Image (cartoon, rainbow, N blue to C red; front, side, top):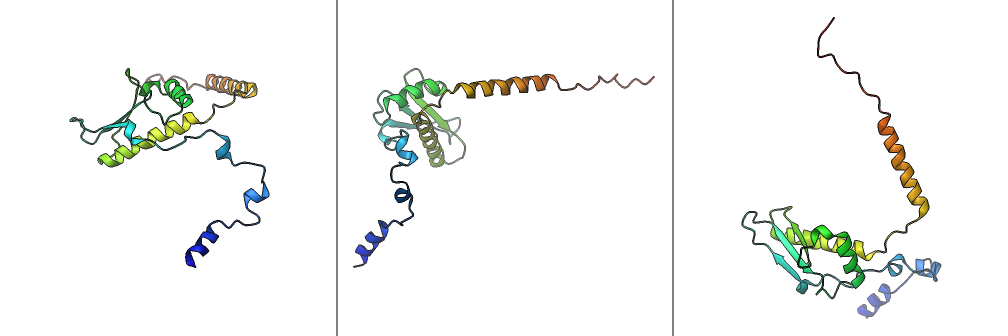
Length: 160
């Protein structure tokens, strides 16, 4: 009897839950393209044998052979993360934040997940009003920098 009760409790939803109040609206996670699965560890090479810094960890992901990354995300990775891609097409990330290799591996994987999540999101809309407001803001700041009053030059300690 106990497991049936637990199953019933897990699927209970209140009358004022969001999907009952707004049945036609979907949540934001289904509207934006997401990373389908997690990071496939079989496609990742972990190098931790650097004699100069023994706690440094480097991970490499070959973008062409990674099937778990969508082609659109691969293309945006190549455009936005050029400094992290070597000549053979590997995405190279490294970490030496701590002295523990396992924590540095976790940090590298977190950087990879953040990059993938960022390139999986749709690009921001290029609204002309936004461009004009940003340009006006930059012009105002540049004008304010030019208006800064300069302190008078000191004579070098010579008194009359």
